[in-house]
Picture 1 (cartoon, helix red, strand yellow):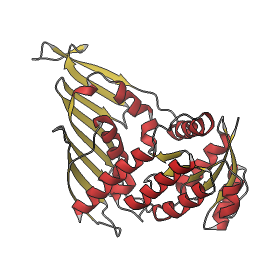
Picture 2 (tube, rainbow, N blue to C red; picture 1 turned 180 degrees about the vertical axis):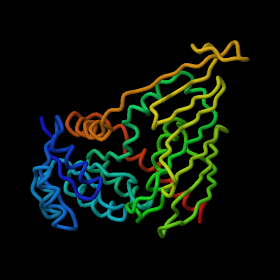
Picture 3 (cartoon, helix red, strand yellow; picture 1 turned 90 degrees about the horizontal axis):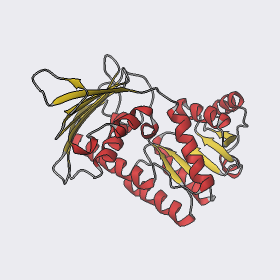
Length: 310
């Protein structure tokens, strides 16, 4: 059984979605739509699918991927769900909590899948973090995601552009939502904050610090987890993970009962895995790994960070 997919939004990431959907094991790309018809036609030709108007693209599909700018998520998501189609919404789920709530409620009422595009959940790196020993003993998380400036996704802040990835991952690892959110940030080259540092305090007393920047000198992507057994240090760019803990394999000077366990991973195509998960949810009835509730949690925390920045 094959899932007929349409892609709404043929920008940078929409193009990748279209190309993956065209080659998916259980998907077939049937339409591409964009506010710029020439852009839709070019990406459609590259992916082997027609460029159609909005209503026609939705009607041709069983499920729709929305990869348009955030300000269009609500209107496009409503159109998809009202037509009775399954919906894959790129992150963030919507621009406001009210819009996100409406999409979630409509998907539930219509019995349609609503998956949110928090792609990092499907990465080999996150799988390695989840599988690492001592993860459930964590008391504090420190995440950094930084990149040089690129003139795209500037319609939203760095919080909704980049930080929301690590917000979703840390909320997933913590298993709870923050009760206190503090943040600093500033506009550097765009009309929205281009860097931000957020501090979360959870009801359990655990804490997290998340740094995101799209105006950095170099790429940086790392995670440090401190807990009762020791420390986990992850460098996502170097594909390295090290856990200092009691009983670890590699001896540590001056800590005779402790050692270091090291691991690495082989990257896989996270977008392909994410789309495959969506197809499975639509065709087989399995719950999506990143559902509307997860999208709402990440958005709520991200908007709290933006509010704290002011």
